[in-house]
Image (cartoon, protein in one colour):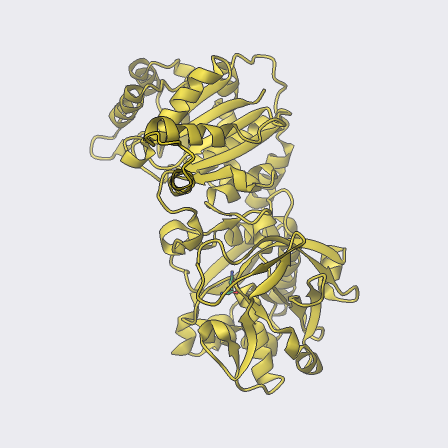
Length: 542
Ligand code: GLN
C-alpha cells in the first residue's frame, strides 16, 4: 500500500514548498522507491487554465491534457514521472463536481456540506490511482491559517487517522526570519504556525525551516521543544545557489532520513545521488556562456515562463555552458529598432503567447533572426509569428496575419474548430467557453526524414504537449514552401502543421507544441540542447 506524505506551509507563501516536495520525491526515488506527487490548490478556479500568468505563473500542461499548477512542472522535472490530470485538484473543481451531482439529485435530498462532502471528495482524490507507488507526496497550496485551505487540512487530518500510524507523515514548511537589527533568527512565527496547525488537529512529524542564515543548534532545540517534534526532525533549509542543488542540500540536512524515520523505515538503501552531483558539477563549472533573448509578453514575471527558463538551463547543462537569459518585452520593438536589442544575442526565442499586444514585435524578432542568420526557436505562438513573418516578407502575402487578432485578408494562422483526439472528433465553436477548450495535451506528429528537426530528435515519430486554439493554415503550405520555408512536421493525418524550419538557415525552427514541458535537468530536451549548441556556434562567430 502507498504511504502518504502531506506537506503544508506556514508563516508566508513562496517558501519553496513545491521545490521541497519535488526534492524529497527525488531523494526517495534515489533510494529506489516509486513516487507520485500531487498538488491541492485551495482557490475557487476550476483549474489554472484561465488565470493570468501574471497572477499564477505558467500553466503546466500534462500529457493527458490537464491545465495544472506550475508546481507539477517541478515535480516532473525532478522525478521524471509524467504528471497526470489526477495530480492536481482545486476547490473550484471539487465544488463544481459536487454541485453538478447535487443538481442531478444524487444526494437524494440530503444536505450537502463541507464536512463530509467536500472533505470526502478531497480524500477520494488523494487516494485515487496510487496502487503502483510507494510514496504519494501531497502538497497543500496556500498557508496554514487561510480560510480556503481549511477543508483540505481537515481532509488530510482525517486521512492521517484512517491510514494509520506508519502510513502517513506530515511535513510543515515554515520560515525562520533573520532580524538584522537584533542580529538574530526568530523562531516565534514557526511556533505560532505549528500551534495553528495543531489547533486543526495536525501534529507535524517533520518541520522544514527556511532561513537565510544557518540555524543554530539552540534554535533547533527551541523549535523542537515548542513544536513537539524531535530536534533531528527540525530540518534547516538555507537558500540554494541553484534549484538543482536543493535535493543534495536537503539530503545533507537529513530530510529524507527523517521522513523515513517518521514512517519507521530504518533499512532503506542509501540514495544514489550521482545524477544530481553531475548536474551540479556542470552548472557550477561551465566551459563557456551564451546569451539568449526571449522575446515575450510576460517578461517582468519569470514564473510565467517557468518551464521555458528551466529548459534553457537544461540546454546549457547538455552543452556545459551557462545560459544567460535576456527577457525582452516584444512591445518595445514597436517603438524602437529591434536590431539594437537583438544584435548581442546568440539565439532568439519567441515563446508561447496569447493576443495581439506585442505580436508585431515578435514578428520583427523572427525577421531579424531569419535575415541575420541568428538561431531562432519559435514555440507555439513563436512558430505562428515566424510563419506570418515568412508569409509577409518571403512569399509576398502582405495581408498575412492570425484570426486571433481579428478577421484578416490572409489567415495564415486560423482558429481550429475541429480536430481528432484519441479517435474522437473534438469540435469547438467560435465564442465558446475559454476554460479547458484548447487543443490540450500530448499529440503525435510525423517529421520529414530529411529535415534538421528529425535529425535532432533522431526519429520521425514524436509526441509533444500542446496548448493552443489557433493553427498554421495548411492551405498556404505550397506558397510558403516555394518561398523557402519547410513544413518539416505534420499531424499524422497531414492536416495540421506541427513544425517548420528554413533549410538554408543555421538554426531556425518553429514548433506548434511546448517541448519545454518535457525537459529535465538529467534529460535535456533535444530541441533545447540543439538550440543552445547552435547558440554556442553563433557566439564563436561574433
Ligand atoms: N495564442 C495562440 C493560440 O491559441 C498560441 C498559444 C500558445 O502559444 N500557447 O493558438
